[in-house]
Image (tube, rainbow, N blue to C red; front, side, top):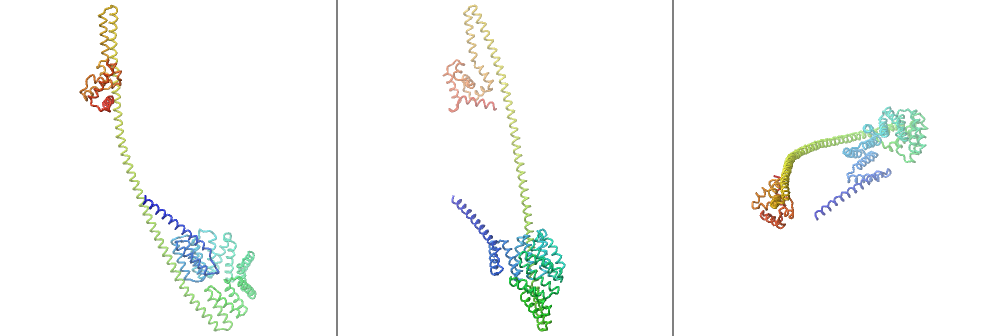
Length: 574
């Protein structure tokens, strides 16, 4: 009892421990998922605190989905900070987890974020286009909104790369899906289309688009859309030669950008103002706004262009040394960007190689797993086939034994039926013989009675005393002959063939009278019936039976009648 209780207690403890661990893991996973929404754009420390807390908790319970989301968010945050090393580090971390836990929709989302990082934050068009191309191939069976967003970003990449016509074609194709992409996102794509026309110096095509965007921004009180469309319209005024209007519009937009904290467009606004002031010959203001563009831009790829323009502005103003200094800075920044580009390419392709190696290793593990599963399947099939074969063999053996036993039993039954037929046949023959014997005895009795009747009638008619006495003696003789032992022996022998012989053989000490009493007992005659039949007293019959039993040496508990029945049964069986 004690060991059984101890085992039960241990089992309950294990179940409770496992349940507690499962509940604890589910609680941590819920906490990780709840941290997804807690981002603070105005507080970088708070954002990183949430991200690293989510990372630590995900690692503690091996929560793959939490790890993937965290690595993706860290890649995005460091991308905004233009920290290439951290972007590549967390990108490789993501892809290492993703190869073990593949998910098509998650990978498409990751590639879109990574493409945005390289295209918009890091300014690497080629890598951004490669990443978006991979995402577009994966999204072939996804909904139109995802495909439209990817196509729009691909178009932006081509525009920034200088392939304006290709970008315009893709944007127009994406805008045809306006029913699926939504009205605001449609106007975001229109802004890219307008920018592409401006790069091609076609303000006649960009201006209607920008007025449409401006109307949408005012209608929906979308201040960002309103300011961006006004910002681009100022450049359209420059492209059409209306420089003063471009300056007035640019300064108006600048005030609103500063008031609303939209620093994202400040560098481009400064560049447009510098170009406009340079166009009207105000080199001082042109230099001022271009230096502001250099100081406020977050896109390193734009700085060499700014310094080139700045050098030209200084040269036009007669400040040759400043122009040379600007050109030197331009060359230094280009060299720095090339070194950074080289480092970026090295890190990027190291990451790609690592990802390819990880993918190959995963494929190898999966292949080995498939091979092992196939081997296990074959072994299982072999075991099942062997089990079925053994079961069939066992069934055949059992069936054979059952058939053999049945066949033997059938023979035994046939033999028993044959024996039964023979016994029945013998019994019928015995009955027939008995009937014949009774008929013969009855005929003899009738003949004797007829003779006695005839003699009696003759004696009465002649009134002869001697004849009457003779008739009386004949009648007494007849009566005595009816109880004759030979008749009993004949009838008992016909009913139970061989019983007299059996009694004499087994018990030679029995007298003829004792055998007679045994036969009467076998015929189930009572003491009284036997006494009347033999013209003796009941006590004489009882005493004779006891004497016969004693001579047979029968046990006290076995009656003479039971013993006689056994003799008859054995005789029948034999």
